[in-house]
Amino acid sequence: QVQLVTSGGGLVQPGGSLILSCAASGSIFSIYAMGWFRQGPGKQRELVAAISGGGNTDYADSVKGRFTISRDNAKNTAYLQMNSLKPADTAIYYCYVDWESITNSQYRSWGQGTQVTVSS
Image 1 (cartoon, rainbow, N blue to C red):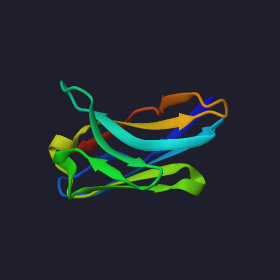
Image 2 (image 1 turned 90 degrees about the vertical axis):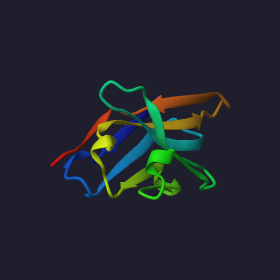
Image 3 (image 1 turned 30 degrees about the vertical axis):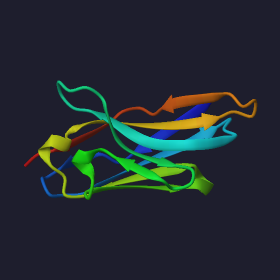
């Protein structure tokens, strides 16, 4: 059983910043990757950012240069720093973790969605 606790999000004006965090706990042997997807109104869910155990990162083109994902491996926690936010970034953000159990089974677990609203 793995739990993801997310925090951050909320309402911010265009050009503002927010930071999301996602902490994983439970029967985790190792974590391969952590990241966020988002789903805006009337849109499909899309990958926003991901980070591997080795620190390799991947970003959606729409957020490159504005969002930064980082990770504290000791705390099994990932952070998403979001700068220069735009109304188009308004969405529910979902944290995920790709992890392996002690029996070498691999899973993806999801956190609860966090609303991010960018509006004046």
